[in-house]
Image (cartoon, rainbow, N blue to C red):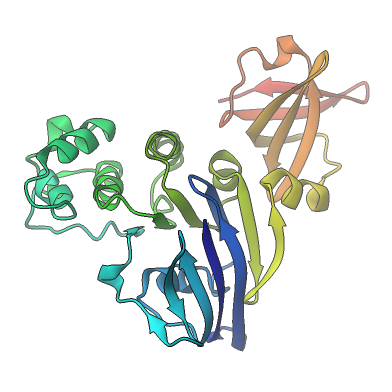
Length: 290
């Protein structure tokens, strides 16, 4: 269990705000911090990693205190078992894929490097330098290096936001598979609703430095943003069986909608597909378009 209760004053576009976060992340849990730029999301990751000090509060990971303002405890970053993946990859340009990954491993731990290279689909690229890789390949290397340290918590600072939609969906699936296999507690910063639904089991919505809502993505977003639009193109976020029908959760612009569909309608639809939802005799008609 990772327990976080921290406060820090931050400068934002709207002036100074007090960032305050109190929450817990269970072992193997995938949690998302959702909010606009300047809300304090990245600062929270930096505080957990030890790169920025909170002004007050505590961070306790698996019973070990990483930070406690009252007890004057503040472990150095290298003493914290953290894997950190950035949007810009932060790979060593002069090192090969293998050397980048081995940098985070104990000396001579070749077997673990081999495992991560295989898990991340990098076997054919292990001798390449970062400049020779695509954006998606570089991000796979960044994931492997972060996981090589066998972190107690994996911190992801919008790592997929620079990629195109198709590559982003592909890497979301790969990241989720890695997380389920290796089971680090994971904290992702994102402002992409589709990504939140696809990856996380719990989300914290941060507004102006404060937690506005928290819970399962379907609870946090659906109840407040149900739309009455009946003709739009959106992305499929979830498909749930409900008796003789299926309930689709769709992202339409900035709205989350739920629609009932028959088995025939959802036969070729999977999470991530784009669909057209329209009205037909006051009933929704759902058609896959991509």
